[in-house]
Structures are given as structure tokens and as C-alpha cells.
Image (tube, rainbow, N blue to C red; front, side):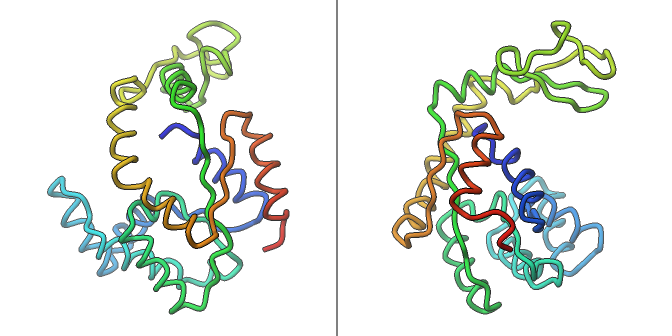
Length: 209
């Protein structure tokens, strides 16, 4: 949590001209289009329940089968646990798709806490700042629209620790799974987004499709 996955996903999407696929986006798209899987997912979401792996996996299979994924794609937020990782292998095999790499953006805990608790967001235009790494010109005020900046409700040390515990329980085994398959690439996420992207590009090769 807070390692910069979303930032890198956006940069990689542009560098490789591929689809950035997040589970959240998939759910929203399927629900808005009222697909059978989307309706099924919505029935859980409306009850405040987590969408079961079986439904999420079905949604991923449908999404990766679409034509705009033929040039490649980046999965963000999936797989979140070992069962999903194993199912993804089956999905990719069935669709004849080769998994090129799994990128783990790794950052020291103390640095992450500083990064997360120092984040500030503009409620009007959505611009992001940081009290140490990306300060606004005027403290507490957005550079662009001059609106006061806020700290998100979940940008606290306590919230981070809760999310980190979930990560260690559910997602850490996914890292070991891909490491054993020889697919894992460990990236130091403590550098700037641009420096981190250069490392990823050097490993994967830019615009190789």
C-alpha cells in the first residue's frame, strides 16, 4: 500500500501503449453495461460484501478476451491472493497469452508511512501534493485552483497498518508464487516515479508490445 503502483501503472500504460486494467474499472464497466457478470458482482457490492474470487476471475477472463487487449495489458489490483494467481494462469493459458513479467514495487515501511501520511489532495481539481516530496507553492493551497488541500481519511498510520496486514496475509504469498515461477521483478519504489519507470523500461524494453 502506498508504494506507487497506480503511478507506475499510468506511466507504463503510456510507455507501452497498452491497456491498464484494474479490478475497480472492470467492475464499474461490467456493471454499467449490465453484463451477466456485472449484475452478479453488483448484487454483492450492493450488500456491502466482497465480490467472491469466482466472480472476479470470470470478469478478468471476459476482459482479457476483448479485442483491445490483443496488443498487451497491465493488470493492477489483480491477482490479490494465491487462488486468483493460480486461476490467472489458467485464464492466460486458455486465451493463449504469455505472461511477460510480474513487477513488485518494494518500499521500506517507514518511508511508506511518511509518504502516505504526508499526502495532500485538492478537493476541487484532484491534484496531489506531499508536504515533503511535492510541496505546493503556498502551504495547504492548490497551485492550480487555489483550493485548500486535505488529507484523505485513509492516509493515516493506523489505516496503513491495517492495509499492510491484509497485504501480508493475502498478497505476500502471490509474490512468492511468481518468484518461484521466475516471473518476479523487484523494483525499488523509493526513487522518483520517473527514475522507477526507467528501471522498469530497462528490464522490459520500451515499446516492445
